[in-house]
Amino acid sequence: MISKEIVLRNLKQRDPLTVIILSIITFGIYFIYWQYCFFEEQRSIRKQGWSGGIYLLFTFIVPISGFVWPFLTPSYVGKLYEEDNQEKPITGLTGFWVLLPIFGPFIIVYKIQNNMNNFIESKIQIESTNAKKIEMLEE
Image (cartoon, rainbow, N blue to C red; front, side):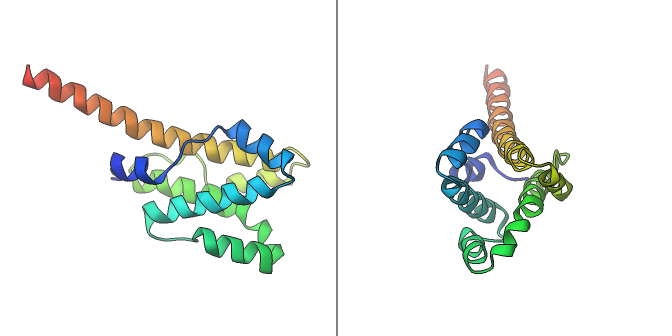
């Protein structure tokens, strides 16, 4: 199981709609930054997979690799849940939303960030529940 300390130290909660809006306003620059952060955070917890630097390298040198992120990113989120003995809320198949014109990529970003936020919240809730149990035992 992944500890709360590791999650809180390495994962950042972000509002999915803010990610989408900033990506639109900055013509995709914020999206690249968000993806970089996502891959760095995942790698720091799971100790495997793409790093943010590898993502940037492939994005700028091999632009066709942009077709990989819709499948790879949700897959990483699903694996994060799986490694924590939780049911996967999304998988690499979530990437097929990209086939929906205009809105597909936004749906994927929303699903990814929303599930990351839920994962962080689950760790916070587990810890607070454990703290309450300890308090009750001490009384």
